[in-house]
Image (cartoon, rainbow over all chains, first blue to last red; front, top):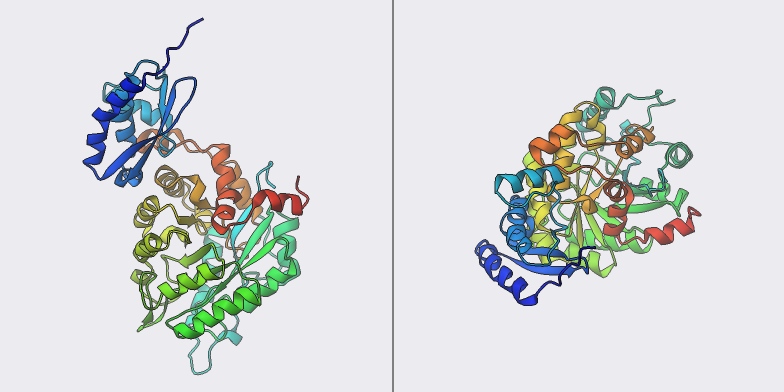
Length: 102
Length: 335
């Protein structure tokens, strides 16, 4: 059985330190909504980013890419992103980030 | 209930297009024009299923209306929605008293949405009338039609004309105010119905919800963009359903756009009954709706899930109106 390692708060904070300036630069910000025991990090976009037409790119690009590199993070979710999973997967592959569909 | 989903129709009208509505001194052109427009629209987009026994979109019989909504369809609740277009109409296109009569004919299932016009009647009268409609008639929401004639129109972000209405609405316990946006109902200019004026109002009154009807068509992109920025703006779909049968691909794209940028928790079903009385057609359409793969692939629209359908069919509007849907289910013996 695979044992999932706990998410290091320091590593998570370091990832957010990389992401946040990109978000702040667009008049938005990012918050952690939840971290599940299974390692799913749910985030929430606020400010200008919460209604940005390009929110899906922000999520799949910088946010998910950086956070998925943090040990123990199994997935990153953002309830505000309503794009289809296929679209998100297409974006991820386009950006060279981790695919959403295996 | 449709397959276990609560159905709350946000827009049922008891409108009166009769010649009796022609205002004294008016040539009646606008009343007759709108009557023929609606009849033409029905013929173009609504003729599915058996034809109605009578021409039903004007001054419908209330018992018949209840039968069509609650016996012949899966509708659980409805908002009797007034249309305060007064300028050329004796009692307003959708008279509040007719809406009230319909609400009172089935008070457990029908709520009253009243209507006033601060530019046409004056602000003081509009405020008094709002209070009367809420306290005496039991109105739970207000609908606004913001253009009456040249020189008689108003904006929702007008601090002098409109903001007192929103303050009064909050004082009266109203959770949602609603707006006709987009296609004018008679000869008025379409730009009078742009959704843009809702922005400051929604920003300045975050405790009040603002419902925009008809996706603001033809200002659909603006409407969706504006709603995406304000959590207290709700999109109320009527005419989407009516147009779906004429232009399914275009309407799916519109719904997809709204789902992508606003989300199903602020998209609300409405039938515009009794333009077409067989509303089960609309309910079945939504319950069975799927987002085509091509639209998902090319535009990024989400699949339409059961949770989305539940929201659109009833949950979203109930939430926006401050109505406890679970308590209603118990009251109506649905659970």
